[in-house]
Image (cartoon, rainbow over all chains, first blue to last red; front, side, top):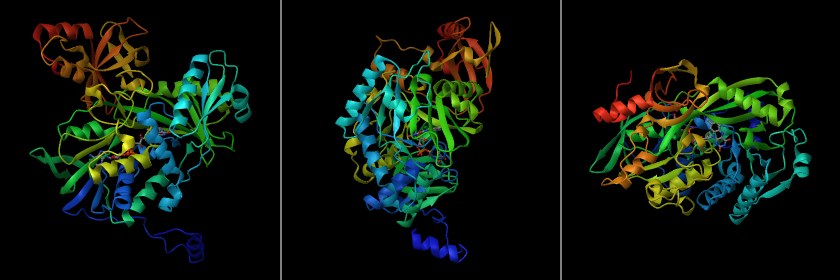
Length: 416
Length: 104
Ligand SMILES: Cc1cc2nc3c(=O)[nH]c(=O)nc-3n(C[C@H](O)[C@H](O)[C@H](O)COP(=O)(O)OP(=O)(O)OC[C@H]3O[C@@H](n4cnc5c(N)ncnc54)[C@H](O)[C@@H]3O)c2cc1C
């Protein structure tokens, strides 16, 4: 089903009776060329790109709940390509380019809004680090601007510039960054994949892999056995659990991250502001709610909810940065399970099991990766070779010592 | 979350910092055969279970002891805490891997 202005008009005068579900609800077939486990952003984007870009359409996406029930429906929707390391930055810049064309490509309103991101600077050391990062971004063609204190003040005058502990000294800005409508991304990719013949099968949990002689033959599911030539796993926070069914241990811990939304307010915050020193970041949704968050709770968790101390910590960060936030009422908060890797960077790779491929380790930053992750994972699944921007996102980089540790924090997942 | 400290009684988890899986008590022998692979496992690979997890917490704002806390990662329920020192010494005596020690 395509959308157009004419269609909206026609439905309006005929009582909106012609709208159909955006995708089918098929029963699983006995066998597929490729099975994608996990109907989150990355799984659906992979299926979409397999069908749209690589001509592979005998594909099924198996999702244990409903589409969007995982992190893709729980994140704070920030998209950006302001990474430091070449192993990451070229990938995220490709993703940014795909975001810029996403709505045209899927004919679905994903509300991609390039309203800019500012990372605040409080010390000389931080300015040096951000200058370096900005240069790295420019080398990758992403563009970056170093802002003076006055330039930041002009854009976001409501911040507390003279906080005694963290006075604001400037910022690193990426104007092309912004936010998108997370549900719109899910629905756009799901519809696009379905239109091209991909079977999206919800309420279908993968409970095991059938592996013989080192080769995967298919998956056991809550709806029976389904055969496949190749299986790609993209289950984010559930990565360790699912891959354990194939006998693998991953360089990963699952952690809970919380997010918060205030009541709807008139437009106040022009873009995304990150206050790393205070463990706080914020943007405003199109509905007017202030969307903000902070740190992980910090301990292994599969609970999809966090604890009060972090809520307090985030609220304190908000008050320190922009005291006016104290006037807004908190509407709701929730948690999602992050696949935190040992170096804070993702993995898109084959495994040692023939035909089994893995995509995960997105930490708290996988929403922005959704388009490129799907494209590159589809590339790997279809061609059996990595896309050039994911060459360093290998599973064996830990054993080989080629870590992608953006912050230089070491093998401690809750610090990334 | 309240952690039942074996010496100090129930303490707010906020007083602690979290390290991770209690298997880290079992530091491999750097001179043994296959040490490189053993260290790769030790530093990077984790079971990351959904359910019971034995994990190291450091009482940073308290008596600065290391504890092995047994916690359910699905419900956040804490089932017990031991001094990591006791766990390590008991393990040295019996030579069982930490994650097979009794979980109280
Ligand atoms: C609070 C919060 C804020 C965030 N903010 C941002 C942000 O601002 N910017 C950003 O870039 N990223 C952000 N993220 C991270 C981002 O949401 C994730 O990295 C990304 O969504 C993960 O990929 P996904 O969409 O495929 O995951 P998911 O949507 O979690 O998809 C995985 C799917 O796999 C399914 N699954 C699991 N096990 C099985 C099984 N056995 N069988 C079948 N299906 C299974 C799950 O049900 C789930 O639907 C945030 C995350 C959270 C929680």
